Amino acid sequence: MWVLLALVVVVPGAFYGIRTLTASRPVPTPAQTAAPVTPATTPVPEEFIDGILAPATYWQACTSESICDASELTLPDFQRPLPPALRRPLRLPVLQRGQACPTSPAHDLATTAPFGGMALGSGPVGPIVLGHGPVELEPSADAYKATSIFLWFSDPSYQGPWILRGAQLDGTSLVTFGDPPALTASFVVPPNSLINGAGGYQWWPGTTRVRAPGCYAVQVDGLSFSYDIVFQVVAAPK
Image 1: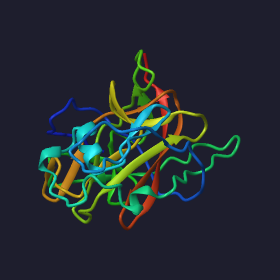
Image 2: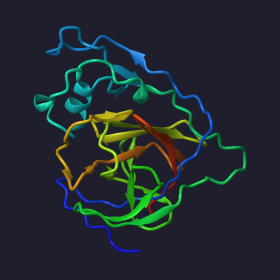
Image 3: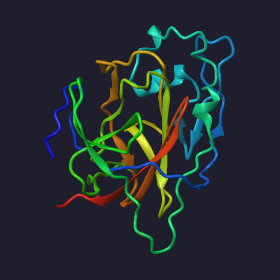
Image 4: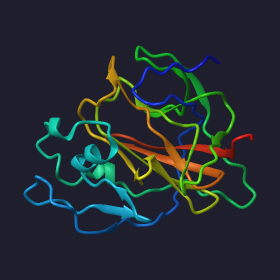
C-alpha cells in the first residue's frame, strides 16, 4: 500500500473500503418544500431528507455543494429535474441479524490526476481510502461527524453525471456530504467540468459524514450503472 497524495483545494484526509452489491432496502422518501426563487422560469422545488437538502437539479447541486460554478453551467436543462437514471430507487443491501458488515474490497489505484491510493469498489466512481481497515469516525459535537473518507472520484472511462446516496445498514443514520451547515443528503455531480478535474478524472475532496459507528452503504448511480459501496465505520482511537 502507498500513501495517498491529494493536491486538491481542501484539507487532505484519509479513506476506506467498498464493493458492488445488490439488494433492496427502502429509505426515507424525500419531503418537498417550496424552493427559493432562482433564475429558472419554473423552479424545481428543493427536496429534503430528514431536514437535509437533497439536490433535485444540477443548479441546486452546484449552488449547494461547491463542486462547480453555477454561473458556468452550459447544460440546456440544468434547472430541470435530474435525469431518471439519477433518481433510481435507493436499494441498499439488507444486513441480517448477526451478519458481519460486507465491506467492499479495496484495490491500489494509480492515476494521472494529483491523487492516488487505495480505491473501493470496481466501478467508475468511488472513494480513495487509506489502508484496508474500517473507516474512522472523528470525535465531534456535530450531529453528523466526519469520517476518514473525504474524496470521491470518477475515472476517465465515464464522463457523465453521477449521484451518491447512502444510509446505515445496522441503524438509522444517513450518509451525508459536505460540512455544516452546508450538508447534503445526496451528492450530485453534473455532466460538466468540476472545479477539481484533470486527465479525464473528476474528484470531490469533501467530507463524508455519518452519525455513529456502524455498517454503511453508498449507492452510486450514473446514466448506465448502479452499484453499492459498503464500509464499516468505527470510532477513531483516542
